[in-house]
Length: 127
Image 1 (cartoon, rainbow, N blue to C red):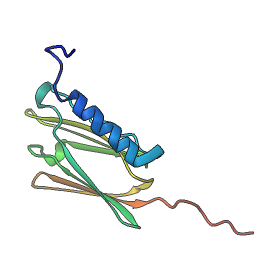
Image 2 (cartoon, helix red, strand yellow; image 1 turned 120 degrees about the vertical axis):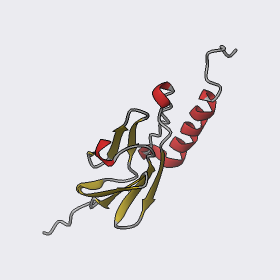
Image 3 (cartoon, rainbow, N blue to C red; image 1 turned 180 degrees about the vertical axis):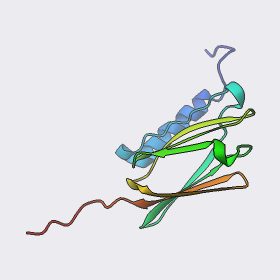
């Protein structure tokens, strides 16, 4: 039985997380973080892949460029941004390893775009 203070969408988002994890296989770990305090995180993120690069596009309305902090360890992109009206804190597991030193980012009209070169899967070994 559901308590009155439970969010009616919790079960819905848990099911989406389960389906995304199933789709992505062993490499995937999707978590939808729904923080209801202080406006919460309503970030929309798209990930585009090519053979050479991974491009992340995020809608971050109402934030000044200087208030955005990006970090990447080669596997996870962390986006932190806040203003007096909104806060965004997202950790996005990238679909494959990237060269974090190749990153380039732009922010225009509330749209953040971050592009990474893919990390080489393996090195050639000569005998």
